[in-house]
Each structure stands twice: as structure tokens, then as C-alpha cells.
Length: 350
Length: 181
Image (tube, rainbow over all chains, first blue to last red; front, side):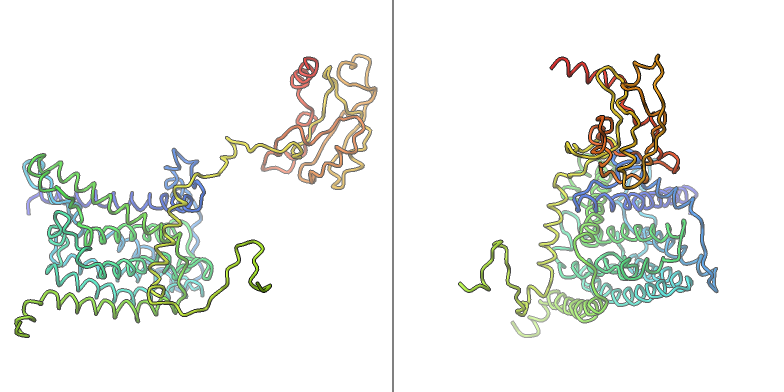
């Protein structure tokens, strides 16, 4: 491990961190803007051009607010909650391939913090730890509303993780790899997984909504019933961390959807670009394409949020356990049959 | 046609409780339809009026901030008779009368004038009864076309003559316009 390697990785990690933060920041702006436009309003437009400085103003407001800690028996957990939520939200971006590679200073730089061969598993692991941030925070708040929100969040995330994992298995049977880089590379030239696994995509998308606690599955924080859900008792930047973590999660899950199903950084003609325009321009374009896909899915999240009303709790559980899980198992079986059709035909004697 | 089936508005829809088909129960079609509706609104022109920069056109009878009038020669109409204060249901108006000096003839139209004239804008309900009561055409709510501006202090909402009396140049301009016509 030479020092240039460490520098290279540090720069990549720093850039990924910064980009995640900026995306989360501007998602809050975009959320308000999209909500406004979908409701025939104009949204924030006072701070900066088109309200572009609004996230900074919000951040400053949150920083300067009084930091209130309720009379709870466990102040330590109260502080730890948002920290866990935030750090898990930021950890997931480590395994995502933002592009193939750049050729700079005479060496190939992989546009990825780390290419571990269990990338997808790592993603699932970190996401399921993320629920602890909500649970601990909600429990330590010592409030009925927070506890209710936390319980809902926990049960919702646990049940939807199963369907999410099962929908992934059908995809993994096809790709044969858990490395996100490899999965991206297999989807070169419009060979997108969504065309092979539409059902898996649909299940994954629905579960991603539930995992990120977004409408129509935002039962963990639903304002109309639980005041603010698990972050009712939070104020100042601790509250900001929870909101920030939610938007960071949204960004990451939009990225995962783009990488797993929509070809990641691939775009039609990428090979041609590499041969004719060089490695760097082709991959910069690849990154831009990936970001366009991510932005579309972030927009989709917001679009759905302002279209569909919230599910009732029993409907949520019904959908998760009785529909999505059986459906993903059927999907696995269909995928298996299609993959082994040669052997099956031979066995049956065709 | 029986009376139950008539729809005067033409928009009557009979609610049906029929079993949903499989496609309907999937909800995905309905969700897609909903998404189409919302995205249409996304691209629709916004009707928002950006208030401090754009002001909505107010109607002719809109009652906003009061204005104490001047006549064609720029003299104040008000004679401090107190009828506006008497008619005010919110007790918002107070005034103090003063006798006009010989050298003040160009300032006040009649021998008596209001040296202090105050309206408490927090009490005022903008009913316009003062305007109706005024025998001298001195107070109007409909001409200023402005809302009472917001403030942090209660004292700021007691408007004296400095804020209420119509500016002199406006009065002169009005007089010119009147003569031109």
C-alpha cells in the first residue's frame, strides 16, 4: 500500500462525501420546489436565485436554534440516535461505483471508494443498521409519539427488508456477483437489468420507498398522527441530522436503483466514446449520466410523495408480508426456471 | 326519467360498490394515473402573485389604509368635527381640534382644523363608516389602495397625520388633472 494509493482513495472518499452532503442539502430544496410546483405554487424563491441558498439558510437556522434535550433517563442514547442515522446514511456510498475509471497522473483511478466483492451485502447490512438510529432516538426521547414512530419504523423496515432482499436474490442469480462494479459492467450498452427483471425492480422500488421512510410509507414520522414521529422531541441540528439522514438515504437508494437496474454509469455508445474520445471524457460523461439517473429517481421519490396518500398501518403490513414477499419468491422461481430451461428441457427429454 | 336519475349540474356520478377487478386491485394503474395528473400540474403556469414586487389589482371599492384629503389648492379638508370618531364602531379614531391662524389659510380650508388626528390601525376594522360619516369629503379608505404595513411595535400602528394626510404634490397633480379635464 503506497502513499499515492492512500491519497487517491482519500480524495475519492472526500469527493463522494461532499457530493452526498450537497445532494442531500439540495434535495431539501428540490423537495420544497417540486412540492410547490406539483401544487401550482412557486416554492422558496427569496434566498438566492430561485431559492438556491435556501438550504444554507435552513442549516443556519437549525444550527442557531436552542438545543433542547427532554427529561429523559438516557441522554447519551438521545444524542447517539441522530449520529447513527447520519453515519449509516453516509457509509453506504462507499461501495457505489460512480464511474468506471479515470486516467490521471499516469495511473488508473477507480471512481469508487472501495470495490469489495460483497458490495450489495454491505449495502443491505448498513441500511439495516440505519434503523437503530431511529429506534434508539425514538426510544430515548421518552415520549409516546416518538416511541410509536420508532416502533412503526422498526417493524416497517424489518418487514420490507425481507422483500427487498428476496427481490435482490433473483437479480443476483442473473448477475452471479455481489460486487456493484461488476453488476454495473455487466449492464454495458443498454443491457439494463430492468429489462430482464422488471418485477424485481418494482418490488425493490416499493421496498426502497419503505426503507427510506418516504410517503406512501412514512408512517414512522407521519405528522398528522404522531406530531413528528421519532424526531418529535428533537430540535436544533440533531433534528437536522435526522432530516439530513433521510435525504442522504434517499440519494443513496436512488443511486442503488440506478446502479442495479438502470445500468449505473453506462450509456449507449460508451465503448465507442472510450475508443474515440479517450477514457477520461467517456467516464466523465458516464458520471454525468449516472447523476442524471439519480436525479430522476430523486425526483420520482418526490413526485410520488405528492401524489399518493399514506398507507394505513395494516395495509402496509399486508402489502409487505402477503404480497411483496410471495411475489419475490415467485420471481426467484421464474428466474430459476428461465435460467435452467436448457437443463429442464434436457431432463424432460425434449 | 325518474327524479333520482336527473342531474341538474350534469356532473352527478352514481357511486358503485362493485368488486374491484384484479388490475384495479393492483393499484399500480391508479397510481400511474395519479402521477400523470400531478406531473401535468408541474408544468402548469403558476398563478402566484409575488407580493412585495407584484401587487394585485385592487377593486375600486377596496378599503385599505385611510387617507385624509386635500382640496385643489392643497388645503386639508378635515375640520375636526369628530363625526368620524363618533361613527367609528371600533373606537379607533381620536383627534384634537385647533383654530386656524390668519397665516395658515393656505394650509387648512376652513377655520377649524385637526392638529392631531390619529387612527389606531390595530383597532380599525376597515368598515368605512368614517368615510360615510364625513361631511367634508376628508377621509377616504378607497383611494390609497395600500394595505397597512406590518410592524413589530404596537405604537407603530397608531398612524398620525404624517402618515394619513395625502401628500401635497399628489394633491396638486390631482388638481392639475381635474383642470385639464
